Length: 325
Image (tube, rainbow, N blue to C red; front, side):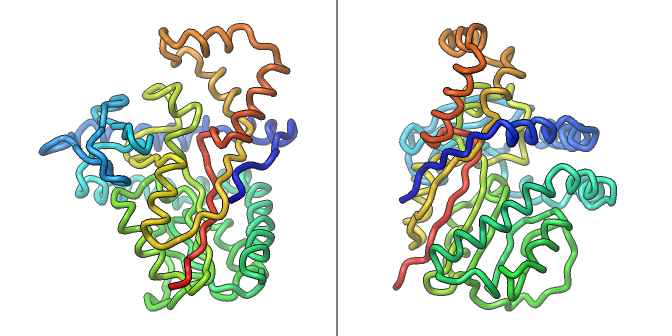
C-alpha cells in the first residue's frame, strides 16, 4: 500500500494560502451551521459505540455549538453525537442550498479552485490507469460534488464515458438505475455521513468488479484536528460529523469488501494554519506552544514534510479497490 508522497512545494503552499476559507460566503455558511446547531440539541442517550469499529471506548473530545464530539480510543476516529433526523434536516436546508447554488458562490469557488481541480482530473487519470489499466471512457459515480465547474470538468474529460452525480445540491435529471461504475468519487462527502458502514456497503454494491473508490476526506488523526479541537474554524457541525482515522478507514473498507491501495495526506498548509490559530492550542500542550513560538521557517518546513509523509495531515486522499468475490 502506498502511504506517502513528497508533495511539499512552496508555490502550492502559496496557492492554498490564497484560497483559505476566509470569505463572506464561508462566514455565512458558518453562521447558518452555528444557528442550526444551537437549536437542534441531541435527544436521547449519548452515543456509546463507535460508528466505525463498534468499540465502547468512547470519550468526549470537545463540544462545539452545543454538539458533543467523541473520540474512539480503539480506532482513533472522531464523530459528532447528533440525531439522524437533524443530519437530514441540515442537508436539506434551503438557506444553505440557496447560498451554495448561487452564481456568485459558484464563481468564487471556481476562481480559487480551478487549478486544483485540473490537477485532480489529471491525477485521477494517472491513478485509474495504474490500478485499472485504463483512464478513458470510464463509468463514474460522483458523490456530493457541489461545484458546477468541477462537475463539468469531470464529465467532459476523457476520463469519463458516463458521469452520474449523486446526493448533490446541483439539480440534474439522471437515470436512477445507473448500473455499476468503474470509478466512484467522494470528495468532501464522507465527513457528512452518519452511517459509514451503510455508505461503504452502498459503494461496494455500486462498483463493478475491480472498480475503484477514490475519496478525499477530513481525518480525525490529522494534526490541526487533534491540536485545535473546538477552536478549529474548519471543523464544525453539521458539516463535519465523521472524521475517521487512517485505522478507521481501513476497518470500513475491509468490512465492505474493499482493498486499501493508497492512503496519502498531501497537505502543505497544516503548520501555517496552526500558526494562524495558535491561540486555540491548549495551554497545557507545552510542546506545540513552544514550537510555534520559537520554530524557524526551516524547522516549520521540515515539520510539515514529516506530517505529510507520515500521513498525519488533516485531509486524506484514499484509493481502494473492490475485491474479487
